[in-house]
Image (cartoon, rainbow, N blue to C red):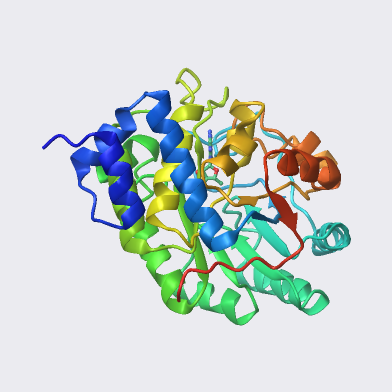
Length: 351
Ligand code: 5AD
């Protein structure tokens, strides 16, 4: 049954169950008036829950070694052009110190799946940060581990965990990842993390190679089932040294549409306007906020390693993406009608 996109927006807004063909219709829609309505409704919902507050997270990319070989990712194992690096605990602690003084109250430790960082080492880093900054949240984004490792990180004090599912469709997953990786395992990790008590974040890339509109609806439905506290989505961006070097990047419009749909479906979720969105469009981050996002994640990694953490081409790491330019970020966000707050910024999603 065909539904006009305005009715679909109303259904999303009122929490009425939305069917696959309705979502496909909305994802296909390019009418600027209807899209404007979608963004406005998403912004309204965001403002009802979070006002105009924008939470900031200090991103520390502490290793770019990775044992995985995802076809889309610039730090994949087989990319020999990457100069690999690891930060020491001291280095990580000085990033946190700088971040704390700038007003950050959440630190996101992100890295490739690097065997050097054993579970014990990660626990040690988490404990060090939590004892120095007990008023801050620590978010881990370090990939797939066993349930007992996740439990150990949690017991060491980690509050949140980011693990994008990347795509909820098995057939599509197989086209993005080599055979040693598994979607089932990914999903199991997410449910384990949630069960342990983390605030969890998941998400996917928009416009990744071979992605269909049906795949995107699968992603929306998967997130509806998972009910994560945080949802990170951004456009796929080509990286020149990956098997997908000849593929097209995702678009601003499709990413904004999905941010709004996800905001309407998850009113209380934390949704970042991602670096990838800021990379494909000069105003991407502000447009993301206007479409329902409420988090930004500036880079706190040491300047000399930033260009080595290249998940995709032209990744922003200076200007407003750099934590050190917080003043300028505050201004651009204020110009968009929002306000950066110094706050730990927990999700309001019910446990
Ligand atoms: N373009 C956009 N996002 C990417 N990621 C990895 N490679 C790319 C790319 N080429 C995203 C993945 C991963 C997150 C850390 O970065 O979704 O989960």
